[in-house]
Length: 300
Image (cartoon, rainbow, N blue to C red):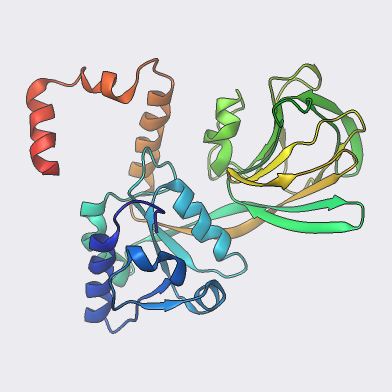
């Protein structure tokens, strides 16, 4: 569930459909305030281990959280857009009832997504993280640039000195990687992207790697302590000397698509809008007044 949007109405749609088809709806306890009161609440472990399909009500961030929660299981996720642009989610709320009927009839496809399985080592400390968009090592303000040696498939490539290092999947190529000037890669491609943000020396251009080429970054002694961000969520700082190893994992996430071609076309339009030097309310002024009134009436 989106962390702040009202999702009860859409949750009730899912609940009614499930009742009609003899299915049970469960929700996370952490989403209790955004669910109808009669939905059975469970913890993350039970949720991830027992569900057969997931409906994500939110934006891309909510969808990424669902995919991370289900790593290790081939559970399909349907995304309903209650966020902003939404590159990963496909449906608008009004389309949800029809989409559920199509899913019941088997009229859908499943789109596989790469993940990045990451190991973070500092001395004897070791932790892991999984991302579907990107892993970023971002400069902590006032603490110095990120300086790291880069190895690919056990071969030293060079070093990076920059404000941040972004390792992205094709899905994540339109996120931080895109903002940093990295390439846009089709979600159907198999690739791992390494993009320096505001490079000062060393490797200054994005690198596109194969999924079978593991990446190793070693923070050099003169590096500032970067903040680790997993799909945009801060996950602590790393001191100099830390090692970050990243491997791409095929078919780690599974997204329900009802109109893959249409979703691709809409995503390209959304991406082009990001390059316009206008705020959303300024773009609205370009829409004819009668269409703006029509849209306002529909929303009410």
